[in-house]
Amino acid sequence: MAEDLKIISGDREDQYKSLLPQIKGLLDGETDLIANLANISAALKEQFNFFWVGFYLVKDNELVLGPFQGPVACTRIAYNRGVCGAAWAKEETLIVPDVEQFPGHIACSSLSKSEIVIPFYVKGMLMGVLDVDSESINNFNEIDEKYIKEILSLIN
Image 1 (cartoon, rainbow, N blue to C red):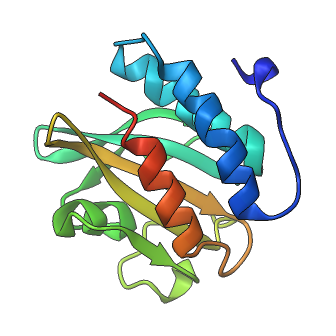
Image 2 (cartoon, rainbow, N blue to C red):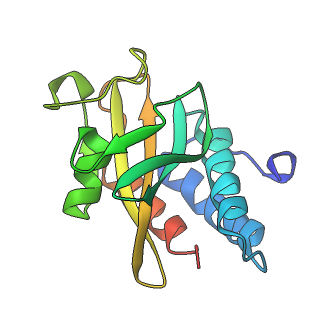
């Protein structure tokens, strides 16, 4: 639970290294996907104070809003539309330093300035994407990608 997280400051990589085993502990023994996605969203939001952290789940050939932390969000995203739809279609991480420069960006909030979207899998099957937004330009890099992928690999 969020109140049980040990939140540290400083270097982002150190923050991920501290958070990773805590998330593993939150997920350990829990088999409900939605509960696990909710705790991952909360832990990332709590540690890094990102603007928005949440999951979109593949349902009937579109992405549907799942567990998230932050302001209200777009509910449905079409395949290959916006950053989330493109990451889903390409099945690869997209790091967008300035969302205004991304062709077809869906502005759920004008406050979002940069974004990282990472597809996630359960038992080898693409289940959806994790979307993380920041109010700052160029807030995400390969460190975020590396550790968020590691966090997502804990989902089973």
